[in-house]
Amino acid sequence: MRSHHAGKVAAVLAALAAFAWVGVAALREMEARRPPLTLTVLSGAADAQAAVQQMAQQPRVLIYHTHTWEAYEMTETDTYTPTETWRTKDDAHNMVRVGEELARELRERGFFVVHDTTAFEPPNLSDAYTRSLEMLEERLDAGEQYDYLFDVHRDAYSGLYNGSNCAQQDGLQMAYVMMLVGKGTGATGSGFDERPDWPQNLELAQQITDEMNRLVTGLSRDVKVKTGRFNQHVSTGALLIEVGNNKNTLEEALAACPVIAQAIANVHAQRTQENEPEKSG
Image (cartoon, rainbow, N blue to C red; front, side):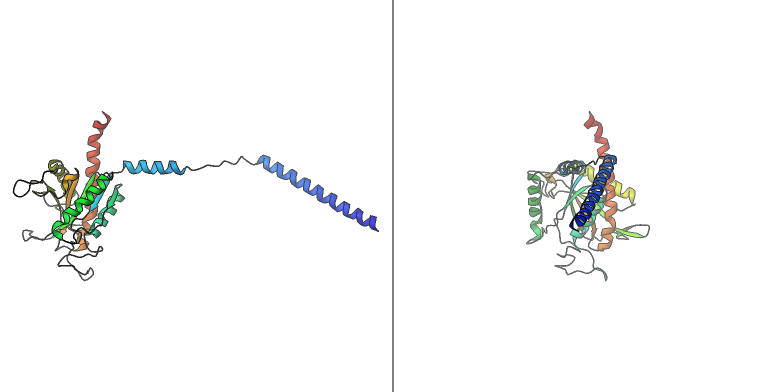
């Protein structure tokens, strides 16, 4: 009885061994037919280097607001808590909001943009330019490099503005824009020891102004040249941009930003193309 049972066990073990051998043989055949596995290892360092190179090729812009709390006319749909008339520390309604919109439009056009949202007005509006200059010097001394530095403000309404307070295109109302260039000579003629290269800044301001008016007739007023310095001595490409005035609405100011950005992009492309022969030579 025992030998009969042992015989059955031996037969089962033999069958299992044969099955295992067949399975191994089949697996070996499948493995032989399978194409070799190729692993592609992505180099994080290489990707980072490519990103840095791409960033280095982008035109670089710094946007800031010396008069950060300047604001626009309130409407039923756009209200804010004023710090004083036509001023607010609410960044959703002051110049920070306009700078944010301009930064977004420039980024969409391939610019690398830093938007400094520091409030430079407190504690005293009268020395806000001293504090914004400290910010500029800290950034530049730290090695930051920019092609353009835009101090974005809004203007004060003047009774000299006749007619509409907006330019219009396709039913869209856009706040007037104005570029301001400082000579640094001072009101009395003594001026600052360190002055802007204002003719170069004026040339850039005029090009952007002309391009804005080509895109939207009458959007930009004439470039204003003043005796103040407006921190434009820190670099060429430093301009003050007035987007609308206190009698405009925030909506009208924001509507002008795509045109401002497109004009800057077009002028940059033109200037880059003009400088290419010099670089290649």
